[in-house]
Length: 354
Image (cartoon, rainbow, N blue to C red; front, side, top):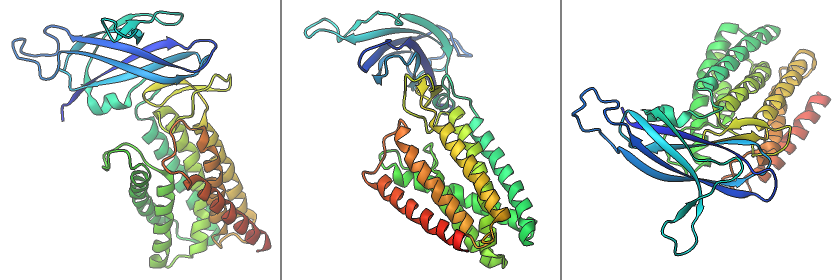
């Protein structure tokens, strides 16, 4: 429970021009004597020295300042002094595997800092705001409940009962989001403690639970689904802002002036703001869904939710190539794109004809 970790960030300026390249930094740390121990005679638990190298591949020239964060595990608690040196492979047959690689925007540096609990260190990096993701996702959920309750009056649906059903369905949705994430990321450690949730799993599990719950509570299924659609999309629009500040779902590094400096918890760099693009997509679809619920004669049939989710999935899959994380499947994205486009076309046609 008290596992300690040390987080070290090396800042450097990307080369202004040229081809993509690999940046490597050598980190050497030493625990300060008498640091972090109530009893100075006690032997520290964990390593008191370390020497590691950390590499960043495909550095984009012209992308500006970059923060490369490295976590060192199983170290003794206390104050550490760390020296960082940019390096490159030494010529074959040299006395050392690395030689210092000074250059524009690169320099040797030293810093001191304390260890912290490993789970916190894994989530901290320049550009990451601890707690931003749960705070914004929670805010989006509250806004969704309020919007759902206001729209429920249009169909004479009991607001309190619907709110309770939605909370229960969303709780199951969190489980579905974790299961979906683990199934689509087989290379990662399979555990519910593994960081990561999938919005696709959340939507599938939540909507399925809503469908089951409406039959138990004798609520109109189509109306429940449609009044849920605008709030669901608004919640995702707000939640994606938490992804940007929390360091997940990050976009690819870029040298474009339209890039936004953000982090994936390891590398802070100017990136394609894919989280903001997906947030804008969700917000726009939320407004369209709201107008359809209020004005469309077919509102209450469930078609609004089907159309909105299909449009969101189509847009999300279109944005996926802008992310820095490679896809886990070879053909999954293309199959999903075709299926979402077919469902969107069919639901839009049914909504117009209805």
